Length: 186
Ligand SMILES: [Zn+2]
Figure 1: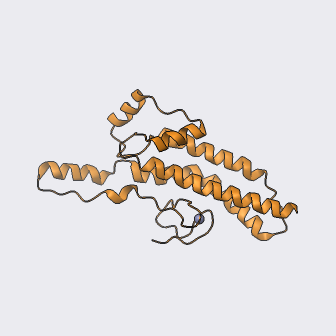
Figure 2: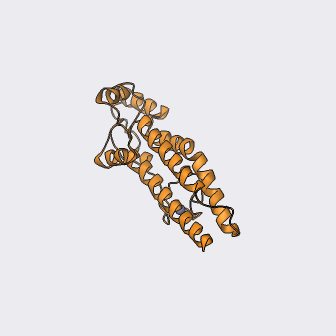
Figure 3: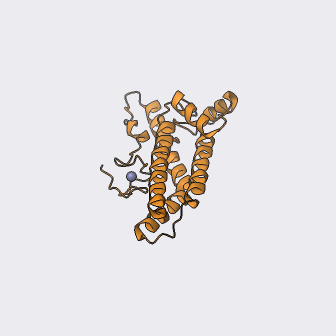
C-alpha cells in the first residue's frame, strides 16, 4: 500500500516539523538576556550542528544594544535554515502525486510553509526580541521622571503554539496553524 505509506510519512514529517519549529522559536525567545543562551538552546544548536557565537561576538551584540532578549539572530537563522532545508529534502522524498486530493493538499501546504519558514520566523522572532522604539521612549521618560512606571513588557516574548501539533503562531493576525490547520485559541 504505497499510498498509505506516503500519507504516514507526510504526517510524521509534518508533526516533527511543527513541534521542532515551535520549540526552536520558543527556546530562543525565552532566553532573558540579549544575545544569551541556555542549556536548552545549546542542546538545539548541538542537534543541528550549529556553532554558537564566541563570547566576544556575543559581547559585541550586547554592546550594540539592538536586542532586548533572546538567542543571537545569526544562531537562530542558521537553525531555521537547516530546519527548512532538511524538511524540504524529506518532503521531496514523499510521493505527492497521489490519487488522494487530501494528501496533495497537505503536501502543498507543507511546501508553502517550508518556503516561508525562515523569513516568516525571523520576522516574528525580531518582533519579539529586538529593542523597540517605544522602549527607548520609555527609558527616556523614566530618566526625566523617577516616578514613571514603565508598562509591563512581559508579554513581549510569549509565543503561542498550536494546541494540536505545537506549530508556532508567527503573526497575531493568523487564525489557523500553518501545519495542521487547527484554529488558534487566544
Ligand atoms: Zn497545528
